[in-house]
Amino acid sequence: MLRAKDQVIRSLEDCLSAQGLAGVENLRGDLEKSAVQLQCSRACEAHLKAELKRTRERLEAVSRGRADRSETEQEVASLKAQADSSGAEMKKLREELELARQTHAAEVEGMRAEVAKMTGELHQRDLRIATLSGERAELRMTWTQLETLQKENQHLRDLLQRRQPSSPKRGEAPAASLGEKRTASRGRPAEEAGQSEHSDPQHHASEQTCLAAPGRLQIDTQAVRAEAPECTTHREGEIQRLFKELHALSMSPREQHCSQDQDYRPPASSSSSSSSSSTSAGLTRRISIPSSSPGEFVEDKQSTSPGNCLSSTSRERRTLSPTSEELSSHSTLSHFLEEESSRSKELLQRLDAHFLEMREINHRTVSKYVDRGVRPEWEQTSSERTPV
Image (cartoon, rainbow, N blue to C red):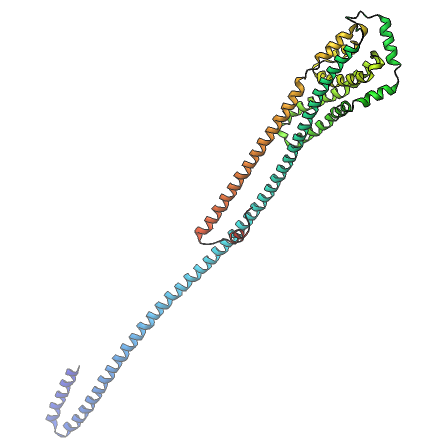
């Protein structure tokens, strides 16, 4: 462009030189002015280029700032989303922690209630075992008293047979002597009967013990029913059988005693010995009656006739031996005590196993929260408490 201008200027100078020198001076002034303007325009152009460059740089900086701002806004939005998700997760974890705390508290309360219940059951079973052992000791004492009474009864029978002047043999005694004995026994006053009862108080005490045995046995049956419901089908029948036998034993000696008083009595000189022998014979018959039938009992009543005195005496001697029912009752009680002790041991083992299981559950729960890096509050409170 400048070259074109120079060429134009030269062409004009040539024209002016050709026309005249006066116009050349004017043209030179104009040219100088145009040159100055050209330099000013060049300087302005350079200034505009620099300003354009600065504007471009500012625009690039603004665009970069806008990109950074958009990235920052995106990061802020992502941080807000993360904060919201972390808040929801924390809320969920708090709810889970509260639920776990409530379940653990409920499990602890249930375990305490179960432990208290099992402890009460153990105390009740210990008390019942103690009462049953006391009853067993009383039954043993009663058995020893019965054995002593049997021995004394045998001794008194021997003394009675020795003191009698002439005992009838095999029903050959005359009817007159038997009638006199019956009238003498019926005409005996009631004071001799009272003296004979007061002569041997141990016999009456043992008889009262035997009469009180059915009531104690009934209490034992109720205790067994309340304590061992799973064994009632087998033991209840056995205990009821023993109860019936003891009831029959406690009722039958009175009838035998009355029948013996009405049928036959020894002379008045041996009243105390005969009363003690009849009492001891009644006690021995209490043991022997369960092995006999009602027909045999009727025959035993009828055997006190004049012709069957010796046969009744021999039958009473045969009943002196202890029966198997009493021995079986003792064995049943011992077997029951052994089973109860084994059941208490089994219950203690179950309690220990339950405690171990609950400890394992607690350890698993604690390890689950420890792996997450969160320690629950109930662990801090449970560490301060004493172990159950």
